[in-house]
Image (cartoon, rainbow, N blue to C red; front, side, top):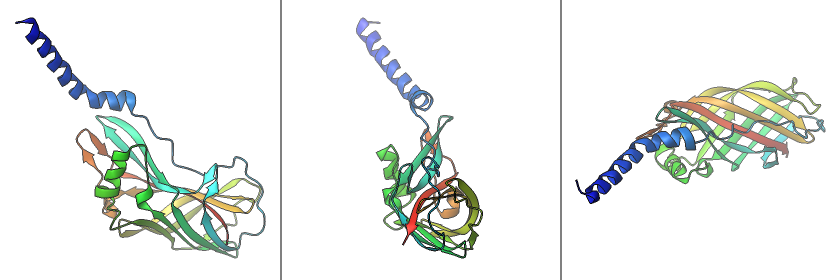
Amino acid sequence: MSRRWRIIGGIVAVAVLALAAGPWVYGTWIAEDDEPAAAVSTSGARPAEGGVDGQWTVVPGSAPNQTAAGYTVHEILNGADVTVVGSTGDVSGSATVESGKLTAAEVTVQVASIKTDNSRRDGQFAGNVMNVKAHPTATFVLDAPVDLAAVPTDGTAGAVTATGTLTLKGTALPVTVDVEVLRSGTALIASGSVPVTWTDFGVTPPSLGFVTVDGAGTVDFLVSLEKS
């Protein structure tokens, strides 16, 4: 065999190896887990000011308790699990507290604004996965009162359980979520993660060759509220 053909053969062999090993290399050595979804932080928290009863409105908040919502999933890359977190600060909502109980709450998320660190993934999410043109928002509406009596007023966080209706891609289903609640100064801050099976909401997890997405994940939120 001539030297020229040996060189060409070597180049072809390297190219084939790169194509075969590329996904494994990416999944094993390059891809990294995202940071966990936002959760209530007591860093710098202050004792609560004023009573909890009243009308509350979702506001942007400030670090480390900035309002955000989104999702957490696992991507499977040739056997390598990579945690992906998508989030947005484009969140609105309100809540009503009467006699120490959360009696009404609604949170709305602009789904098209949810982003990860990968624009191609975000394009798939907004288009084929969530069809944001037809279903631009996701919502959570409280269905039953939540007693806030156990939430501390000294700048530490407490836990409550909330039941409500989660609407994704036009499908509304009942959900239960454990919520961490913090009263700090004049702010009321809450975070939680709702476990979901995507197909229950008419969402088909992507499967694109060597990359697939788990059929279950979580819908995550951290909301900072101030009295209206």
